Length: 399
Image 1 (cartoon, rainbow, N blue to C red):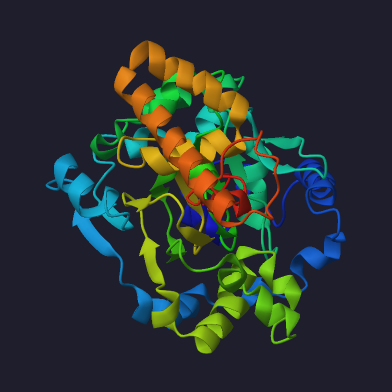
Image 2: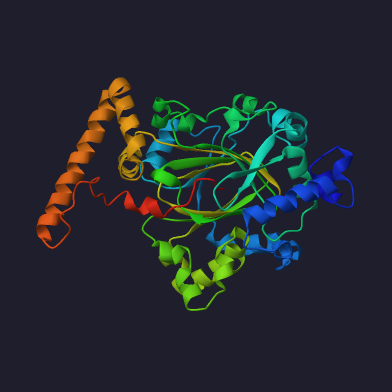
């Protein structure tokens, strides 16, 4: 009841003692498929429901060093020069003044507009999407006591039935992120890039890099998110605390979920490596804030309370080189489609991509000549020092 009142929900389904039997049945079915290694009772075995996330926030306040600028006065040119080109994360405040948040993006309004719409809230072991009508997911959000709850993470907004597709017209592209070269291939051919997120308190995403070295923006419409970011030069084995788990200094299980990472792994990691050596950047993002995450930066996110957010990944002129190399090496068929689009619509980008390929081929030849014992098989894509790091990233279904 307290949660429903706080979220200003009106339907009686949110003011019962527990979620409806139908919602519980559907949720349990999804849980067993989404995390098949867990039994149902293991979803709440750590009693995180009883822990204070306010105390967790206070624990990390000393590391809240991210730059903040005001979206009402900060220009797109300033953003490019101060943050995008040098690859520096930032928070831009006051970015939803013209998004009609109270009309479209409160929990009650989302319930009114989309209660029958089925959204993705997980995947089975074969990567198939697990969907649930929003009315049942919102019940789950209100009543659940799971350690790390299911997270609504919808990428195919434009294909949703029951009115979901109109969501795209209910927000405006920020002035800082107008450019996105992936759009040249059309919506049907580009990788997933746009997500609608509804995260129950304690849900989140553990440490990852966004795919294909793309940069991203994430805008909070409701709720607060705790972020930790590490620059690209910090090794994967360190940010994921695998060494600590291997040495049994932490339980390997606490690396699987965001809340466990923030509660157990990150404090131990900071103690072991030192915050300065890790170069960590942390912050709390609140409603109306947009965070910019440069391509290649590791990041993990925890929802400190029930949240609604939108996020997009993009390719611009300022992150072109590293993204092209990653696309070329990891998605060769898509890279050819993208190259054809450049040739047809932006000859400057076409020439730039070809020049990068030549540079990398020459570097590969030099390395091969310097090491004659290396493999003679050079028929595949050229070696690129800047793109290989993204192969370790998880899906962009995050944050």
